[in-house]
Amino acid sequence: ATPGGNRETHAAGVLTKIHATLATLEDKGVNAAFWDFPNLGHGPMFNASFRGALLDISGENAGNTAGCHSLSR
Image (cartoon, rainbow, N blue to C red; front, side, top):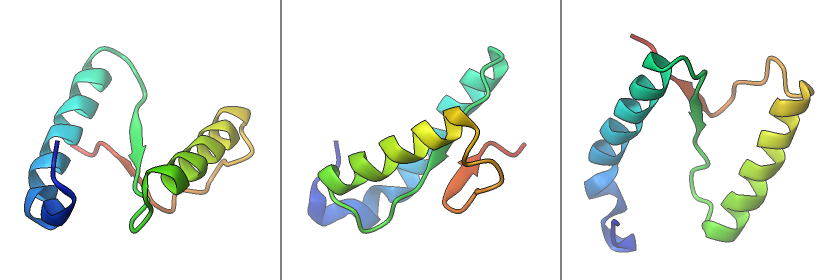
């Protein structure tokens, strides 16, 4: 966990862990990506990510990649 006051300090390490996780999932055949919602707290981030996930699953979000980070090797 990263204390709220140190988010910038730990951001690079968190991104490294995210990319490692994406690589592991991709190696196992899972199509994975993560979405970045800067400046949102826990509640607003949940609402934004849940809505985005539902749209993505439904196919309604096709082509909208703003904030999406997939693994590029």
